[in-house]
Image (tube, rainbow, N blue to C red; front, side, top):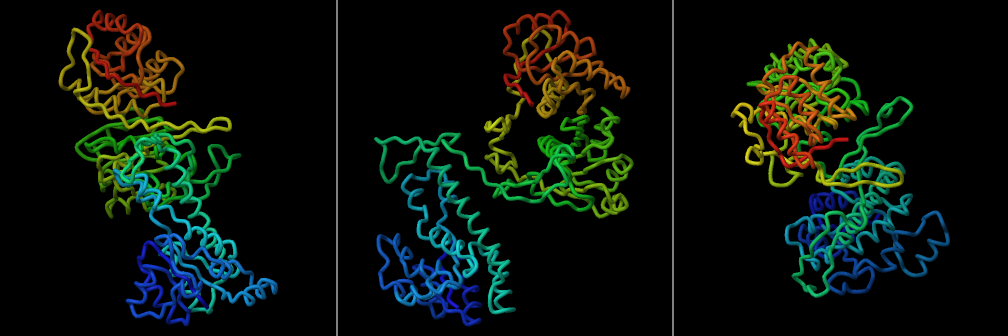
Length: 532
């Protein structure tokens, strides 16, 4: 048995090669990999000795040769193929171990030059991988270090690889090539080419949206069904998921997550992790129906539940703090579909153990940083339309106190300003048209998803009344501007004394005048948060 090893990432390659040698496998290699193996005392044959042709063009041409590709592509079950190999003195290659030049890592570096990007486009590696993967019945192709153990296990057990493993390796290889080519396409079709700037140190400007978009995602699981029982569904993740994102979570107990569970869980998780204080978010049908901050998880939950306990029944609950015994004892009384938190104490897990259908999800909070990825956020969001795809930058805008512009005679109090920022965070995650009443770090009434902003305001009032919560002296956030004063009148009639809205309407002055007439404070945020 012959193995050809040529890897850019050399993690574990020496140990793998030593194990192969111990099993009697003849080692072929190239360039730096060959030197590394030889320095480790392994008998290794340079590919140049096999091809009788030296590496050339700075190593660009070394494996692109009939003695390599013939050895990979020849079908062992076809006498004509084997006769051709014999005629031309070509030996079969039974195992190919290749990983590719680090193109993705290279272009991710700040200040990456066009020359460096181009230089890190692998040619010989993908060509060999495709050849080996195509001939999967006869050749095993290894494209990642985490495959080494499975390959060695079968070689030790049977002296060869099973058809099942070879096929799986082939699929993984073609997937890797697709990802690699997609990354190259994404990069090159985003480059704003400027002929006059061409040089070795030319760092091109890149368009936010490339000329061709190549999405690659890995399936995590098939789901029982989709949004409705007559639909099919599956969950996929990014190739490299952001830390603190939903797909990085671990399900600790409970039945399988459904399509709707996952969608609602994502809405809850994205909302709760936007708060610095201990927070609880309860979501039903993708809308927050109760959000609050408190001194700990229990207090945050107790406040959040008050907003709309009816809607909270069978909802999704998310915390940004560990769930302890006290919080668990409170939550377990409620019918909950999914409970998410950065951690659960041992006592909390014991409390939920009898509730076998309750899904517990442990998700680490993002560590934070300057980039969306470091903050656990999507950079780009997508929506399918008929035979098309809408792409946009994710709504990652964070409102700061300094961004607020007071436009009325009455000034908000410090407490009102604090509550306004809280209300604004919540409104961002409520379906448009959104109206959110808040007070003392909790939602008091949420109106979501109506065609009219007036109706959203009325629904919020109705829900508050049903929950026996007073909207007197509350603050209110509207995800978009009030096009007429009637929307403002409705929230003031309900009890609001301070309003946050984006501003930007042709009738802004009419609404400001109405606020002054009603004796309430109003601030403009300068940004809207439509969520359709």
